Length: 199
Image (cartoon, rainbow, N blue to C red; front, side, top):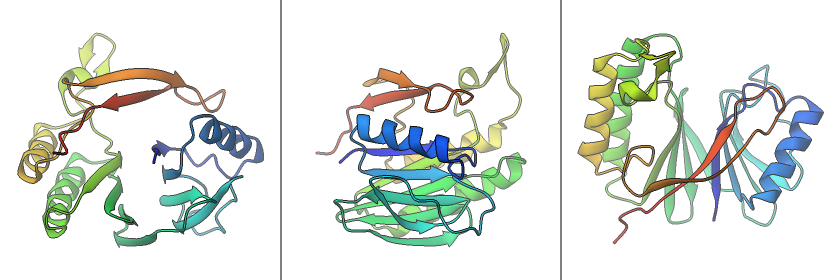
């Protein structure tokens, strides 16, 4: 089952953007769409995406699943995290604070507690972390950006190491298999794969 986690920048309310997104999802055989900032206003009726069923959420975090799947159980333990139960797999979809590093560090500490509470159940943590895990991941021109604090990076390292998670954006087994630009004015998104140590 292929999942896509995408920050949609509140674009799904526009019919053209929705059609482009649906075509991209079909082309890549995506079965589960985990979306950050999918639409506005946040409390509106979720827009329909062709071939998908809305499974839960709001304009902050939302999930759509392919029409050939049963909708999963979806809950929101915090406004910035969504818990999705896909049969044997639990997904924690997040959208960390975009404005302050102190809030992001606190959210990462809370997320670490949520991961521990899953009691070693198969788990995927994904979404928009709004931070650069390593200085070279957040360049501003030729210089590392100062947007992400060391406290955030330490909290992220604690989350990953403490829970035995794998950062698929880091070196090691991670490779780009393609890229797409779903909308003319959106960023180019990389399609990435990584070998995960599941055994």
